[in-house]
Amino acid sequence: MEPLTLNLYEAKTRLSSLVEQAAAGTEIIIAKAGKPKAKLVPIRDVARRRPGSAKGKIWIAADFDAPLPPALAEAFAGRGE
Image 1 (cartoon, rainbow, N blue to C red):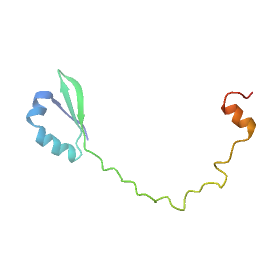
Image 2: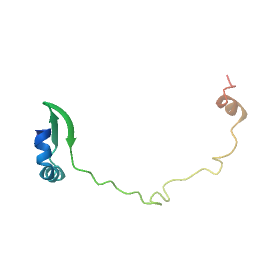
Image 3: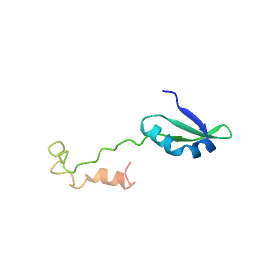
Image 4: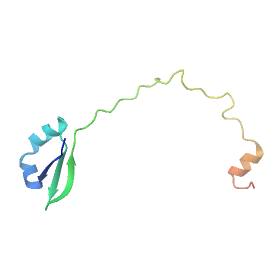
């Protein structure tokens, strides 16, 4: 679908109907002096995260927080080769 382009004054006078059109899926470009300045598009629903939804899919090694080997620790500290 081709975007609908309107000048700023016309967009101000028709804002309520333009919002309804955008919510229905029409992309609306608002221009000032012939140059596009803004785009009116529908808001997409964002899926809410559910705590615990990855349960059983992720595991952490028993030694994940064990000290690093000395050579690797020195490299991270900038003292290695």
